[in-house]
Length: 95
Figure 1 (cartoon, rainbow, N blue to C red):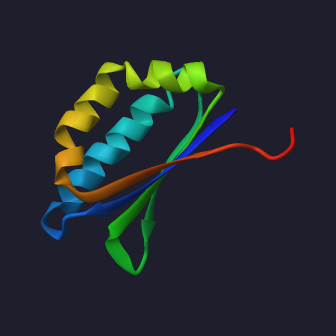
Figure 2: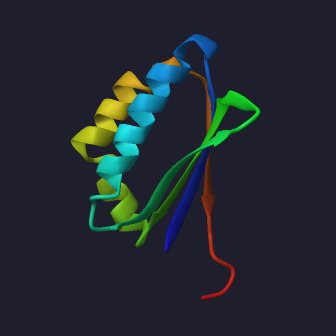
């Protein structure tokens, strides 16, 4: 299992546009055979703070995800709307 969380800070003027692009990317990602979960989570007290929570079958499934057209479009169109982006890979302690 490969788990990724991404902490995002959206530029305030881009909240609506970014959120739409992130939700579309998540929906497309959930159609991938190796994607087990992909959630877009927002801080209810601050709409500029978002977390992506992604679970893939393994590293290869995540690598395949990064090669998809929808991921490349997300990086090109949505990432520039951010003030910051920090990725964290997680490993399960026990099976």
